[in-house]
Image 1: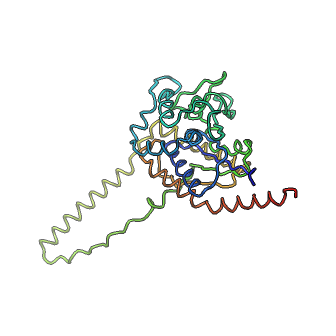
Image 2: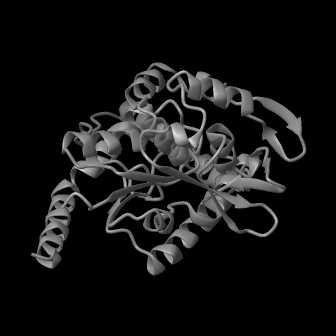
Image 3: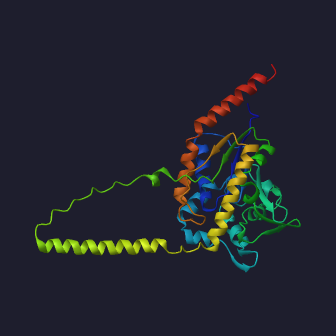
Length: 320
């Protein structure tokens, strides 16, 4: 029974990544063990903080910070390969919550995923400088500059494997719990319909003066509606560069994740309802954490049943 290993996979997702904090908390509250972690991009960052024992500190910190302050943890580099650098600030943010610098110092085994920029090969980082590995895994194309590591230029691992289930399997996980942030579902709380006010029927017009006044208002109303209709038909404003890059990479990641899951699906897939969040909505920390917690809590019974099944099978195959 003690040989059963549970692997946690934390996917990429920019500002939605704080949902990983809620997911881990839900697993801990349910006393579900986590023996190893595989992460990509922001999932790698949260996974590293968790594996170093600093998750609660990180949670308190990001909740207290606003979105603008959070984004200030990226260095403007003004270089051709990316708008932001981020090396110094990432180290500063990480070191606020952990004193670990290398993979072998972590309390739980961790692997993070990056991608080789020219070949598209998946690069799994699991030794040496932890912070450099995190910086490579989080190098979102067009936004953050790539990282030069062992004669290779590395970018965000999400372009090849945003939810690296296969990496957790290779680490020896018997059961893989994956948290994917690609869901387009909107939070149930935000999706609740507001009550529609009852329509009030105006009293009948009683004299000629009021008839003319009502007709005038009706004419003005028609004019306004016509102008609004013309406005709708105008050529739409094209999206900004950041929106285009974000949307294109999101589409690519969705398709890659589906292919990867078809080949190597997780045992439990958790998908927080964060479809309403944009890439840099860092002021929605509490919302993201809450949705991560709720989505994971809803899977707790499935996880327990799976654990029990594996333990029963292990006992049955154990030699007497």
